[in-house]
Amino acid sequence: MHGKVYLVGAGPGDPGLITQKGAQCLKAADVVVYDYLAAPALLSLAPPEAERLYVGKKGGGHTLSQEGINRLIVEKALAGNTVVRLKGGDPYIFGRGGEEAEELVDAGVPFEVVPGVTSAIAAPAYAGIPLTHRRFTPSVAFVTGHEDPEKDASLIDWKALATGVGTVVFLMGVKNLPMVVEQLVKNGRPADTPIALVRWGTTPAQKAVAGTLQDIVEKAAAAKMAPPAVIVVGGVVGLRDRLNWFETRPLFGRRVVVTRSRGQAGGLSVKLAALGAECLEYPAIRVAPPDDYTPLDNAVRRLDTYSWVVFTSVNGVSAFFSRLDNAGLDTRALGRAQIGAIGPATAKKLMEHGIRADLVPKTYQAESVVEAFQDKDMAGKRVLLPRALQARTVLPEELGKMGALAEDVAAYQTLPVREGGEELFAELMAGKVDMVTFASSSTVENFRELLGPEQFTEAMQKTAAACIGPITADTARKLGVEPAVVAREFTMDGLCRDIAEYFKGNAAR
Image 1 (cartoon, rainbow, N blue to C red):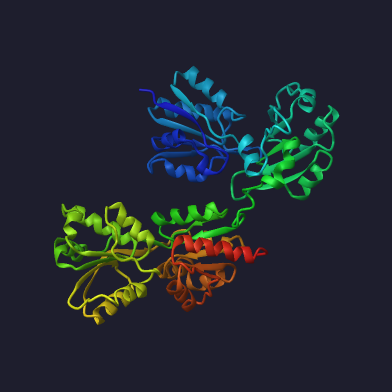
Image 2 (cartoon, one colour):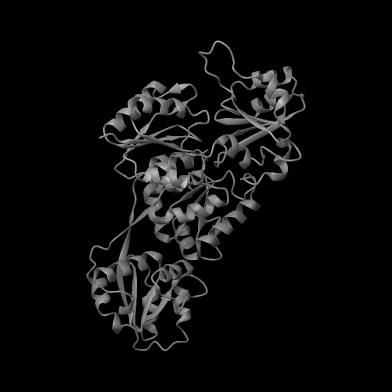
């Protein structure tokens, strides 16, 4: 049986601009054949076992010829696979998707086209340039800046573009910028017409240069503009200074390392990216089951004997309810036990299980839980603490001093990650990282192990460190790193706010 091919537009670079249908196709793919301009993050949407084949074209160098790509997707489909041909931007906007579709028709392979957001509209939009505007123009044209070199003559009507279209967008035209400018001016476009180049549009590496047809060649050369970039010509370019929303975000252009575990890094990365940062995920820890679930399972079977169950992390909540389900129980097993939670994220996770925490301290560390219990009669009360195997002992010790019977059980453990250290060390030593974030003491300790003690000391002198709270900051100091940022509110939102404030006051960094 034949498989099927989906010609999917990957969008312009920001992985958030993939369409829902495009994402669904990737999740069902057996084979992904992808381009240079397809955001790498999109590949993670495909199943782990899916085959990933890179066929990108960069700077004239082709991993595989277009004819070879055509044969490849046909062969993979004829072998019965669901094939996603992931193409930067939109498949049919200068993406040669039409040629690939013709090959599929000739081979009798069923296919669908999933349109994508083309860089022709997205890059200008992210650079503050609306392609149409009632005060400037009712028309826009999209033109290739790199015609097929085998053509005998150009098919571009330069006279019509120069005098008959308000906004003109050229794709793949950076190398031919002098020729583009010359043709437009020669055919009647005024030399003072605004023009802009937008490189790596919609990504944290976005860079834009604006000028007029008269001076843009010199300005682009001075700014070292290179592909991939789009060129926008027309009066709407004059709106850039007023409408530039993307490049004015507080962390735009900053590269930030996120060291949280793989499952949790995404949340912090999303928050930092929303502020403009480029996030490099290098988990220093991974969350794993404890070596033995017996203590937790025993506690789950006698939940009716506890007066309190106190959760100190989202991981603890997840592990606890997983074992509750494993025992064939549900939230009713908690009986009359009251519930405590450190931090709003932990409380929110409990709400997913239908549990509203009875106690959420004003600040989010063990000491605050102890303080919150000071006005309660804890004598003889049994308290279950499903936590990390390596958790600090402050909480059970202080509860014990109040007369409580605190039972500390391992719900999970954090283990070090050893992959990626050499690559990250090189980035840090090259000065390509603006900040490293630490969301727990264990991330600091294991990040040091990831790089190696000596390299850790050397590399952290090249960048700034941000810690989620004073406990994590103290660990960093003990290991020789003075944090530039210590979040005043010990949450991910608080950490992000203080990082943004730090860079606002250190704009030259």
